[in-house]
Image (cartoon, rainbow over all chains, first blue to last red; front, side, top):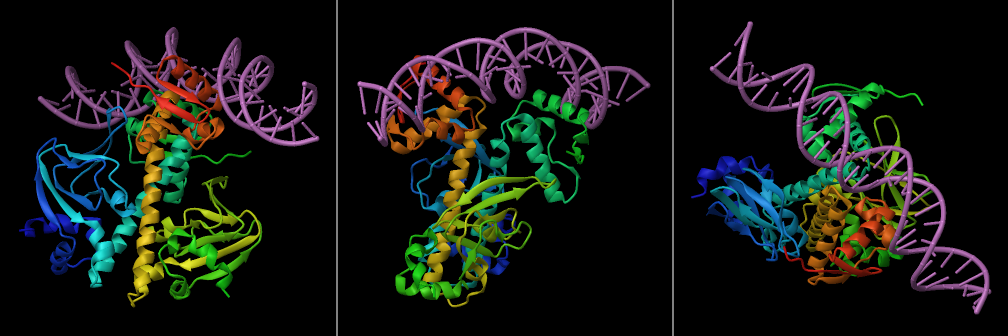
Length: 223
Length: 223
DNA sequence: AAATGTATGTTGGAAATCCAACAAAAAACC
DNA sequence: GGTTTTTTGTTGGATTTCCAACATACATTT
């Protein structure tokens, strides 16, 4: 019954390195099951114990939070192949967000706690899953830290510069292209698009950077 | 030789649930060793492979990053009992930060990769360590997400309100005390202390909140 | 009680950011 | 090529935040 999802599951980082013929056993071990959801349906509810992780097979889900006064805000989304709820399951806390289907679709639910604590047979894939899970959570950790460093900067220029320096660092070069257009970059940096454009112009005039569209070059500064 | 550190190690969340008499075996499995460091000494160097995690036994360390132009910025610290470098080790990336001793002290280094991949004997504590590690990383993840949500807000009022709503949520009440003084809160929210004070006054006048020192109460709003 | 130090609140001008509207350039479409 | 749409840059005024300075309240010490 799960055969039809094999391809999608194999592209999911949680199952990286698990051979096709092992996947079925893994899914059994995780008590995996597929549910169909309708647009608007609640997949996870804030406050419930988090022992499941979800994997989007089709459609997509919104991750939302309701604050103390009941105002709902959207804090993220997950698309096909992506995992959600893993941080809560691994942290052993209750769900601190709700997840609801944004479209009709299919979700696989897997019991994450099982793989961590209960299953006694230390099957070879068991370790793989744990390793993948740890890697996923740790990578997310690094992404969040990186973004936090940027948003901690006070001014638009500092935020942009922090971002560009990191891009230069990971490109290993002072020239690189970024994966955002201006609006996307503004959103990522948490600033106004027009303010960002203006700041880029100023920095260009000040010989700090060169850029054309999404290509940037950092110019060395003598102090 | 490691006996003297037992107490400190047992308070480290990485070893939670490991019995005293097992701890020695665990440390062996992790190839743990203690190094003495002098103030200013580099413990981890940006760019080197991250297969070690560090645990501060005494003194404290700074986590720093050098940007593309070589400018160093301090992005964190770890104090006795705390872990550092775990995100990189678990993510399987190179160190993206450097760690250096801020004072003379002692650091335990443990081979984190070992516990994840190599060790074949599935000793009982082995699972405990992995579980602890996953929990540590996942919890950090939640903390970072939480802070990110706050810093993503554009205005001082929105940042403060986001923070207060979360505090109210986790207190399960509209009244609660916060663990910061005004300066600390301002730093956490990424705003100016004076601007924060002013905003608090306005919100008080607008009947949004009541507060005295670090006690706050959110007032219900009819819309 | 007086003196000192620290935390918090207040204020006014400088600076930065937001916001909306428009101009210019680039890309997509017919 | 010409038209339309999208993206990017620019501009000016309203708003917000920063910054420094000072006032007040509170706590601690002597």
